[in-house]
Image (tube, rainbow, N blue to C red; front, side):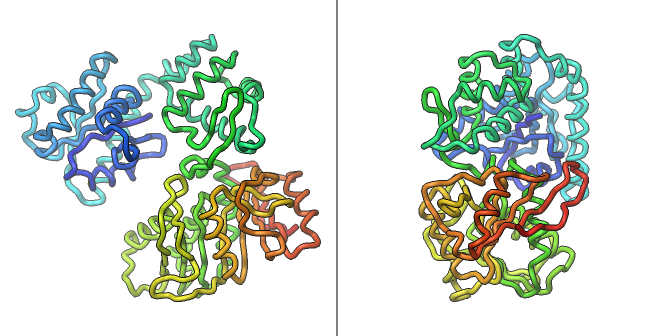
Length: 460
């Protein structure tokens, strides 16, 4: 379910808090997270309301009631409500007495915000979730009635965000091993989708329609189409973080148990290292370390630690955690800071890391560890050079893949850390090839059962 959150700027802190308390299946749209630089504000928001959203939640106070922009959003939503023939706007009243100035409210049931304490905001989010669930339950039978014909299924995909997200995830998984110099044929992708999904695709034209729809919604960013072929041009953090989630979590939990007290840890940018960051946050909450210094060039990782510090009420002199971020320019697709050496940092000087944890876009015996951008390769290389222990995180899908920029060779004494469900030929092949090098592979075996904990790592 996709929800548009309409509000005046003054209510943005409240809206952010409510958003955090909503369940994962409620996919919210808020301008600061969704609108790209350079995009038309009016076009983006009108499209979000009238084409992408299932409901609009309007946080209404006097500022919003008097805001021409909020009223424009409301008019777009009411037009959509008229087109759908069902309620589309869910009002949340932040002040009393607004009914008189808003005639459209008089015959509607509204949610009310009783106050702004954490408990009250949490309660509002629960009420909103219940209201949305009630609408979802009402329409459940219609959602289950998937049309039989393939062209009707594509039409259904237009209105079912869940189906589109599943299709995007499957396409990313299938296309991931293919790069510009060895693209995947669209005919091969079509055959794979026909055998692995229920999309009901029967022709290249239908596949084109689905791919263009996903691209317009930025659900397959970084994947390039060239006539009859498709390949990964650039891995984007927003969808990489959805791949191999359990494997990344298993590696993170295994790795964090090996971090010693008073360690200096370098965390590279990437979805795998973000999982390590979250595991470190859990360890800090349970006082796993008395002192820890983390150096990172990743904006999302720094933000995760900042949120933890605010949540725990950590002061500036708290010894449990110190976070150091080098300067540089942020790469928009990976949120990595590049252009400054991670070895020399303000107020810290030259650091030697006890542990450097690095992500990679590909790992192969011929080319070592590789990535797509020279600037990121330089940051990774610099961090590894200054580390006593060098960890590279790579899920099995990245084995045998190589990119244009190499940042480490197997003569550098690397530990490649990977999580697998059972044996994986790609991992076993590289492990044999590395037997006469200073590098090795540690495999964390994970159970096929989601509830099962990760097993101990096996060094290969």
